[in-house]
Length: 304
Image 1 (cartoon, rainbow, N blue to C red):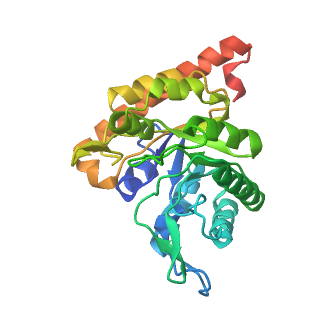
Image 2 (tube, rainbow, N blue to C red):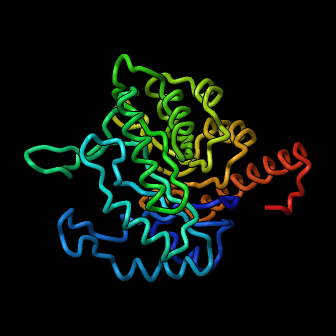
Image 3 (cartoon, rainbow, N blue to C red):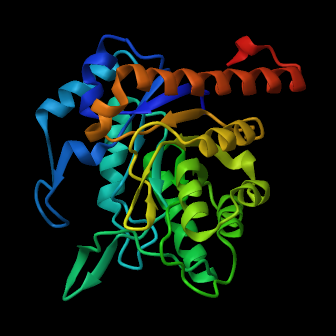
């Protein structure tokens, strides 16, 4: 996997800035599902692409390396694995030269009343057990074969943990990356959310996680609502996320990119200047960790 640097998760508020190359980014991350309508398994054609979005993505691909971030694969659902969804991603990987594909380690699809692809509306809490590990490892292997590129799975936000799991979340991820070709997308804001809402010790989490398997890091901001802190991508990163990034990036020897996420509805509050500040700061962390690693290994910084 090529080391890309600092990227931004694409939304339509960024189109003009990105096409004018006015942001300090090395790559762009796209969410393919936002650019098509999925008519469901059995429909012909199943995926109806939105022409205006395709034109934008084609234009971005002429300027930046692209990576994909999926939101609908539901790889941890007990319902049948949606290989058609994976094949659509594989088609996009070839068309747009995607460097890698990431997804959430999540279950959002449930089967009920004869409908396999009923959407639960939220990501369901996962039981960190042997059965789930066996299910996901097999699906990762199949997906990587179809995608012909790395697949990264992301740690999620939890509001109602499943009690008495067989293993911790960290142990699950460590075994998943040992027993399958899966790499990790470590979302530091998700981890911070869990630390606020559940008391998860973020420092212990990253201490025990095999950081050599982390290929991408997500950073973002959030806000409070109804007594919870939410992963709403509501603007600038909180200080705790920057602290985690500085700690983790230096130890993630397989890191290929740091991606800043924000939702376009918050762009008027964030502003272009605020966005640039977040990206510049992420770039400083990226360059510092690269220098540290190059000095430690004796590798020239010009080698990628």
